[in-house]
Image (cartoon, rainbow, N blue to C red; front, side, top):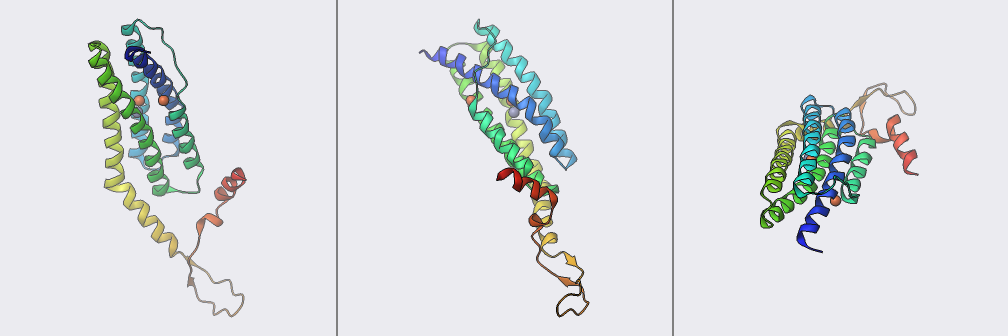
Amino acid sequence: MTLHEMLVDEIKDLYHAEKQLTKALPKMAKAANHEDLREAFEMHLEETHEQITRLEEVFEALGEKVKAKPCPGMAGILEEGKDTMEEDAEGAVMDAALIAAAQRAEHYEIGAYGTCVEWARLLGLDEVASLLEATLEEEKAADQKLTALAESEINQAAVAEGQSEDEEEVEDTGRGRSSGRATTVRRQSSTTRPRAKAADRRRR
Ligand code: FE
Ligand code: FE
Ligand code: ZN
């Protein structure tokens, strides 16, 4: 197998990876709580559609038929993302986890496109290289945007949510040696919310 043939294979893999992402990103946008994060997912969905078109132009430039080859790498990353969305987490905690999942997908793409750009250049396929490079830059920008959202606000908000849950005030119900006072208890929210139970059932 030549490097050229290997490149074509990698493009087919990326084509399938991007196709899978167009199905996952709307779900991630829906699961996002912070408006900026939801918008980031929606914007990257639009970019992903353009990236698919760009890959079709790459196939054309290579004189190859447009064809996907199953990409189990992205499938696995998105499977983990699906698990994340089923976790009993809310607000900024869910958003922080969604960013973690999305960045895994972006990093996979950055690795793959980075290699393909370099191979295309080495093989003298300038048009292919520049098409792939345009996408590579979008993937990097998407990744940096997620980092910025996490670091500027969402991670801190997620830390704060944990603190307010730990010290939630509950009414003493009056059983046992009750004094009738409100008490501060440590509460594990994951054992009390219906969503947790649904998720637990799925895991059995
Ligand atoms: Fe992409
Ligand atoms: Fe792959
Ligand atoms: Zn991407």
